[in-house]
Amino acid sequence: MGIDTDAVTDQREPLSRERLLRGAIAVADADGIGALTMRSLAHKVGVKPMTLYHHIANKDEILDSIVDIVFSEIELPTLSSDWRSAIRDRTHSTRAALRRHPWATSMMQSRTKPGPATLRHHDWVIGTFRRAGFSWELTAHAFSLVDAYLYGFALQEQTMPFDTPEQVPEIAEAMMAQISSEAYPHLTGFTVEHVLKPGYDYGKEFGYGFDVVLDALERLITSQD
Image (cartoon, rainbow, N blue to C red; front, side):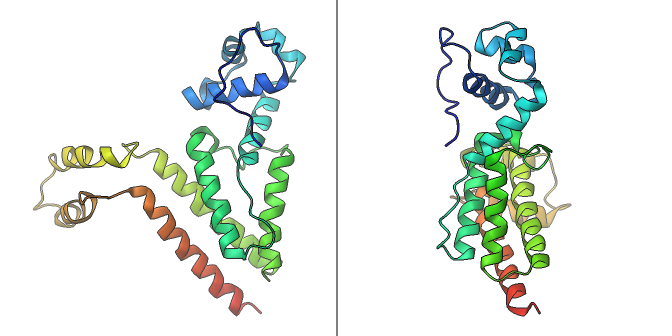
């Protein structure tokens, strides 16, 4: 289980490694990973910066640890699940974790000292493909393809000019008011006939695209030598 970062930091609570990491995630969630410094973390947990070093070696150890915590929040289905369902559930759970912690999108694969949750996660993904009959080479292709789609979509989603589907019509209409429908007929038609229709939610594109990825992998596994 991950650390409860929603818990209110109690300044009277003795400083511990868990409380320190909980504070680090809270800072990163609120203001981005760039805002996480030893000074900002010390302020968050109510201690002097030097006190942090009694519990953690340096900032790199903090980053390694909070990335591992995000990995620990990802649900991994039981080994009895079929590979498509298992990979789909794991990937949707990862996307949910990245939406809770947007700063983690660019960091999940960047650490050179992975923690136990990270290692367990990667071993599970590789094992799921292998048990399904993927060769080592095809497992590498599949892992890379799935995560390229996952992290790419997460990054794109995070940089959209809206946070909820309810904001889309107002933003889309404001953008379209600045362009000529005659000069850009296809963009206009796409916006009017699709984006501005009731119930539009860009997030739904994730499931559609991911099924295309899974379909492609299923064709590959049936045709591998």
